[in-house]
Image 1 (tube, rainbow, N blue to C red):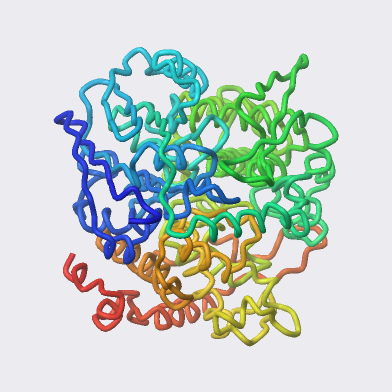
Image 2 (image 1 turned 45 degrees about the horizontal axis):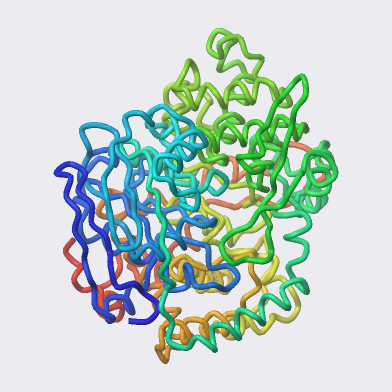
Length: 620
């Protein structure tokens, strides 16, 4: 079977039992891998009433057919479980090398259930799997754990998916860290891993992923390796922070907990400033020439930042920087190091700090509540200190570790007005008031607010749309701050294709066209597939996620936006109009209908389930 190892590893930590499942080719063609495979198993096997931190939750690591094939962008894989942050479908996608190594070790996915009585780790190597003791690793940072296991195994080339102390302490936005620098950041999957007493998964393999057309794959790989500089050089030179100052000039840079869209210290924290000050190297992912990752080092009287943990991405600089009013790259990088060493999502951690800062400035929190911290916007030292407190679950950090939805309820008074989440997940660093299609995406996302399976309204705002839109049946330009039926349709097809990327295991930052991705799938698998089949696969994925969330208790009333998005910015030169409640409600109904879901409830209709061959899930 080309494109797959044909093996899915089953690990029951309660009974210390390991089995191998061997799906047939039709299964892979329907569920592909990555996010889609995760949605299938969660919907099929996780009881509706299960608590995310109970042993009956599943934790799934899954690559797609492109993961581990030696072409640019193939380092992506997915991690999934029922989310302890949102209570619904949880998934995070991540680059690096672990996903590729997992596949080379002989497995398309690993499904972990149960809970070990004591800490353990998994060792996967060349078709073999072992459960090993990890009591001596419990409490270690990710860096110390990786070094200890490498020495123990005698395998310096092994690749890792790890949790740090934040995952062990069940911080609800703890994440899974791959190779110390790459985070499966969102939805709290590190807490699920910690709840199972699973410290890490180590993988080492020497068997390439089999492909149907080796010459075809090589030709596509050579084409991208020789042309990527034409459109992606900026990602190499400045990385994801390269657009930060531009967002400021457009009034779209989240600032002081999304109160404003412009930050006066933007030039001190943008990609250019990072390059010219503390950047010492550029890192990358499996088989990718772009090397967009930042590696930084700081060693002065205020901060010491170890390059072992890489450096901050745009989301991290936005969340700990402009959104906390902090213009010190050293402090931001220290917060990033804490998150990678202790295993926390930088977006959720930064948003928890900015939420607490606004509460403090409005006297909902006192210095007694903050352990003496003057928790004001712009105080970089306080930001770093509170980030460490969250990782350690100390003082106010223990409350924030439960997520800002919970913290807002506990603090009371006006705190909910400062809580910027959907479905319990904090906003990423993209201003929904300037992109109303993206705002819709935040509201209806199956994982809570997320930018990676969302749309960018600017691309729909030109006088004439490009070929990539037209091939998806989108022909009507729409301004960025308008949310009509044409915009809703554009969001729906965009989201389906983004979910496809997460199922394929391919990076959005590599400039593969849709046609080239389909060529890759054909060359890798030998299938005579096309755009229709691939689009339907993305649609099947998100429909399974919707069914899982409905079964978990989500309703239409949850597909809403926080209060702040319905208000204009407090100050500054930004002029974006807010998203109106009535506008959003109409768009949500239109989205449901376009997806083949009931327009009032969002429940997928029997005919849509038949079309997607999901009738097995109708009564789940």
